[in-house]
Image 1 (cartoon, rainbow, N blue to C red):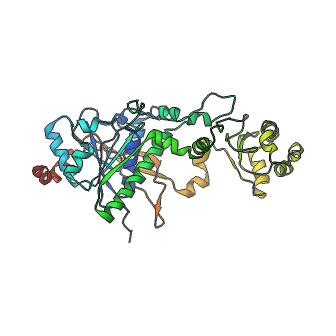
Image 2 (image 1 turned 30 degrees about the horizontal axis):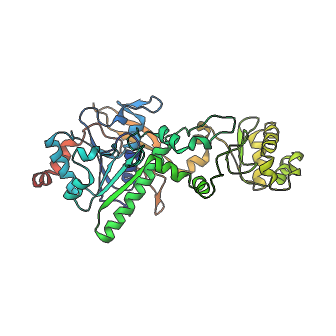
Image 3 (image 1 turned 180 degrees about the horizontal axis):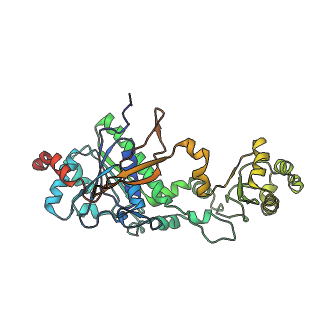
Amino acid sequence: MTTPLPLDGMLVLDFSQFLAGPMAAMRLGDLGARVIKVERPQGGDIGRRLAFAGVVEDGDTLSFHITNRNKESYAADLKNEADRDGLRALVARADVIVQNFRPGIMERLGFGYDAVSAINPGIIYASVSGYGTEGPWKDRPGQDLLAQSLSGLPWLNGSSDDPPVPVGIALADVIASIHLASGITAALLRRERTGLGGRVDTSLLESMLDLQFELISAHLGDPSITVKRGARNTAHAFLQAPYGVYPTSDGYLAIAMTPVPALGALIGLATLEQYVDPDTWWTEQTAITRALADHLATRSTEHWLEILDAADVWCAPVLTLPELVAHDGFRALDMAQQIERPDADGGPPVAIQTTRSPVRYDGRVLKNDRGAPRLGEHTDAIRAEFADEEAAV
């Protein structure tokens, strides 16, 4: 018998758009919650049109299909009183609301926390903003690259010869969605124990700051500690040689913490054997990494891996995207799943390959093949289902 998922029976209203909020709601859906996505009748979620790599399937972007899988779509104009009445009926039965409008907008539309909790005192009201609700940045556009930049994160990537290098994925959105989903599940647990609803808030910027907890903590304790990126091939501003990524004759090899002299003896680079004092792994970092880069470039990645793996040195090949998805290690994790959306004209379903939830329960891999909804696809059915609540409200 299949055990129930942790959030089976929970109802989530997803008012959010584009990435961080929808991803948080998607994570709750992966854990068993029913997620109803509330969208504007004209155009819906802007994420339907903001394409990742220009990829569009069946009229919606790839990002939308993935981050809104396993949801229902309810079209409602929050400025229309009749539509607001319908939404209040949903609110009365909901367990969670997720929203990521700029601070103050949901309040003006009549669906801020105070208004919602008056209808449903046990509601968990979850908000993700760009930079919090106070301070000089609160009204700035909440966008991933901008949040990365304000946090200083791009200064941690690359070498001292490079300009600031942002992370090439929507890191702030992804991390914020994890924090929001985690906060929501904790709030639901508190409600089960105490009956109390409440608010959960996070932001893109706070998520980026938490990601840098070591650096910020060190600087708060000692202001002289700042980011000083090392020579080319180093991979961390605060770790000594040989920590870095090095070219080989056919790719790249990452090497983590390992004693420099022992590494030199293993790979036949006698120059490194002189650095017996660990302090020199800092002071001579540039010389060490340059010597390593020149030497490792003479042979293949596989050649060096055979030597280093046999000695239990912490290392790994730097895989390209095609190499990753073709690897037995990727297949062993069973991280891929196929989601499907029925064709509007009765043809073959629209099928999209994507990743699954990275969490397992009782050894069970969490997969669901239900694709993202079309705009307003479930409005009529949902209104009929909640008609009694709407009349009462």
